[in-house]
Length: 233
Length: 405
Image 1 (cartoon, each protein chain N blue to C red):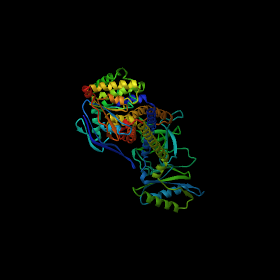
Image 2: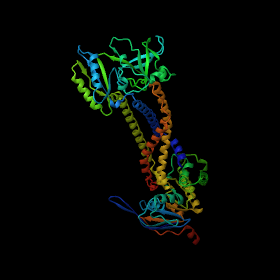
Image 3: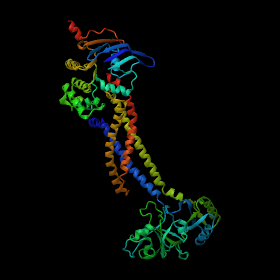
Image 4: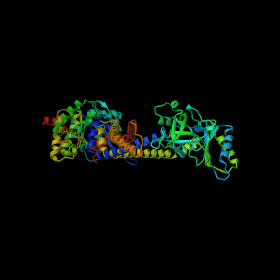
């Protein structure tokens, strides 16, 4: 599904050179739920940006769904993001002037889907997150947890094979965080691959796989997938 | 156009900035349409033919200040000499010329009587050389005979028995008759004094360019003896300046007790006559240009502000699959929607202002073509103004979506 081999990323200013990722390698398989943790500045967000095709990398190989993304043109990267990846952001990133229906519609509008198909997908995905009855509301009329559910609906509507979640519960209280986490688990159970960046060890522990990033590298061995360890037990 | 619906809904939720720009566009269109209408209207007036052979004519004015100034003799000898100078087509003494903004007018009526309504007419006084000197075309009737020419001083009240009128005047007096049928008709001046129409000329404007009936003129066979008079000289094509110098030298060489005013070409007369109109046109163009620049800057300002406010939103759209082109098109379309709203208001404003101008200043109504042309211009200005900031917005990195500050 996602394969990164020896990825490096350097940020340069006139005087400073920061190696955000160094020899970073990771393999994510179809259906995985991977939690990525690490201290601030460790390179988690850079990894997420590169994995989500939001940022380019300087060295190494990155293959997404069997296709090398190195050197692809901006338009192609936009299309790949739109068709293969769903994003869930810490701050939800909903468009405040648009109602929920239009917010979920945003990624679908960049794909040549019929109006009827878009409508079906929007209604379905809002139904999945339990907000089908609030389509005409604007984000400001919702709680944080509800807004993150809308963001998840927006990610789901595109029917991506791969969900990238950046601290999806970072701005939520524990009750809302739990409900969002349960939602992600159910999405993963339906076959969608999820990579989630988080600071919360408890949430990370609920993922099938947990990797830690430090100084731009995967420094700790992955623990065994939850299902495997459960089987051994 | 895929973002059209969401753009409308988003603008309706966040109206203030968009409304201000729409209002600015409406005001710009209102002023621009009416200003251009005035400019074109003035240009059409300025482009009208005076009826003269303007490129080959000049006037010289004189004033006899000495008691021994014998105007009848001086003028006759001057004209005899000038008419025989090389390069001269013809010359006359005349009370006025078109576009000079000074002359004589009277009322002409088709029936005698103080109770009958007269039509205003500008009167040119000149001898039988008038038609050739003005360069006008006789389309019916005949020219004056030299023996008809009368001398007129400040005390003369009577008018000659025959006159030549312009076609526009003939049509005004006798709307149902052809020029040929108007010849030999009698009209009345000073309420009861009959004048027979000797001929009809194609066109000759009155001296007052701002007069509504500027085409209504009459030439009478009169040589004036007012001490102040003008010579109009027509030259062969291309020889005006050369002849002008020769005439000037000749007139200056005669010591007859007169003062000569600077010689003016008819081109000079036209330029002076329309100087205010030209200045007004320049001012109107400057106003239009400033308005367009201010409007464009307003759009640039609003879009730049909007983009800075929506950087994360733009990054999020990019992260969700929008290409750079999609972002560019989004802002161009958003501006198109705002501009269109302004233009709709502008149509109402333009027509409203024009109705007021028609009532207040007797301007003609604007033609419908002004509105679509102004709309296209303002759409283009809007799109050009928004292009730079929108192109900048399209370069916002999608990675901004994951920044949490």
